[in-house]
Structure formats: C-alpha cells, structure tokens
Amino acid sequence: MARIPKSIPGLKPLILLLVTGLLIATASAEPAAVIGETTITYQALEQHVKGQLLRLEQERYEILRAGLYELIGDQLIALAAEAKDQTSEQFLADEVESKVAQPDSAQIQEVYNSNKKHFADTPIDEAIQEVTEYLVGQSKQRRYREVLAALEEQYAPRVSLRPPVLEVGTGGRPSLGDASAPITLIEFSDYECHYCKTAEPVIREVLEAYGDKVHFVYRDYPLDFHANARPAAQAARCAEQQGQFWAYHEKLMASEDLHQEQYQAIADEVGIERAKFDACLISDDFSEAIDRDIADGEAVGVSGTPAFFINGRMISGAQPFARFKELIDEELERIAGE
View 1 (tube, rainbow, N blue to C red):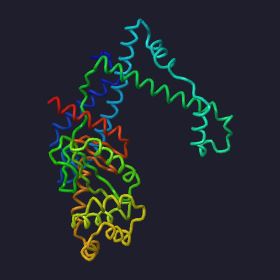
View 2 (cartoon, one colour):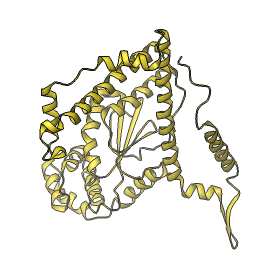
View 3 (cartoon, rainbow, N blue to C red):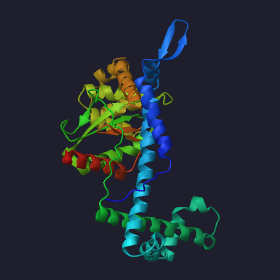
View 4 (cartoon, one colour):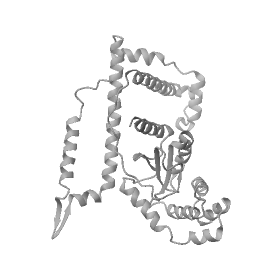
C-alpha cells in the first residue's frame, strides 16, 4: 500500500467543515429564521437548497479525489525513486524526460496544419518552437501516466475515499438493457442541448462496450432557455406512445432543426401513425410527466445537461468514453468485491 503523508494541507479546515455540517444536520429542527409567527427551520432551508448542496458535495468530492491522486502519485514516485537510491527528480528525469523524443518535421507539420486558425498568419518557421513544446509536453504527460500506471500495479494503493452516491429513480422512462444489470446509467438530457448531442455517440460506445452489464435510462430535462427542448421532449413521448421511442429519439438528437414540421417528418421516417401522433403533439398529455423528470433531476443536483448517474454517482456534462469507463469499472470492481 502506498504511504500517504501524515500531514495533509487543508485537513484541519476540512475537519472543521465536516463538524460544522454535522452540527447543522443535528440541529435541522432548530429555527434558521423567524418572521412574525412563522419559523423557517434548518430542515426547510436545507430542503430548499438541496440541489445546490448536492452539487457542492459532488464538487468537494472531485477536489478531494484529484488531490488524493496527486498525493498518491507523488508517493509512488518517491517509493520508486527510493528503491533506486534516487531522488524523485532523478527518477522522473530517467523514466520520463529521457524517454521522450523530439518530434520530427512531419509531426510538427501535422499539428500546424490542424491548427491554422490558431496560428493565423504565423509562418511555420516561426511556429516550430511553440508546436515542438506542445508535442513534447503531450509526450511527457503520456509517459508520466504510463509510469504511474506501472507503479500503481506494483504497489497497489488502496483508496478508501468514496464518492457521494445518490438515489436516482428511473421514473418509468424508456430504457435499454436489463433492469437487473449491475450498472444503471441514467441520463437527464435536453434535445436542444449541443453537449447532449455530443454525448450520444459516447453513450452508444458505452452500451456496445459493456453489453448486458449496463441498464441505460433516458430522462427529460429541458432547459428553460431552450425554447424547442420541451416540445421536442413531448414529440419523443408521443413516439414512445406508439412504441417507437428509441428510433425517434436517435433521429431527434441528430437534428439541429427543431420545430413541429420536423417532428412530423421524423415521425414519417420511423413509421409512426401520423393522425395519432399529430393529436398527441398538440396535446398537453405529457406536461406533468416532463415536470416530474425535471423535479427528480433537481432533487439530485442536476442544474444543466447532460447529467449522468452511474449507480447514483454523478457525471456532469459531456464527458469522453474514458470517464464513463473509469466509473463503470470502479463500480463493477466494487460489486465483485461485495
């Protein structure tokens, strides 16, 4: 197990924060304010800002996690250096710096050509140093990660820091995969959101990679400033009414032009019976159901889209496949060890 420093900067303020939170929690029935004959309790206050507090808790965990892995990385390097009778700096010089080659002209040209907007009118001869520094920096980062991965395999540090886990319901919404799968992935999304559209191929990659290990659930979270998001969610639910949610959802997410004629055109493309669909489209049948999705999202800290929950662990925003893989693998490992 990697040795962690006995003294961690910021530990005392962190303990104070935890103790303060505990005191507030135990005094939740106590008044936070009194106006005339009306009392506002800490419990009512906490409920009122529950979503914000959950987001703060998630942010706090991410900061702690990043800091912990920095400390673990430093300690792993120190242990490996000690085994070679070196300082950490000497070890990194041998294992990282010396292993990184200078980029060749073809690599420099490729980066330059791919970033013409950045370089504007700067000729390549004047951009060589900047491009070289960039490529060398990227190579050093890759090599450093490789070294750390090998050291983690060798020393096997045990991490007990646990993320906040929330109870997130599926809301009876459309899903893919077996509901009894070890991983439940829930997305709160918006059909007008660019980042939600960006996340679509990543979710497909996750489902392809993990197969029957993942149960995926889609929930609506149309943002107020996206005028077409709510009508689009209504259209998707009208398609769901005819058993065509996923075919319709895929085409709707791929569309940049959201309006009633487009909703109807997609319905024709996927073979939905139009008379019933059109009547549903102008109805208010799903307004309360969409509101429930929004309320459920807010209750677990969702404030923007896309927002994902992997067995109750939150991922905010459009993230690469590697981030989903990291959390899913952690959950599968945890479940296997129970």
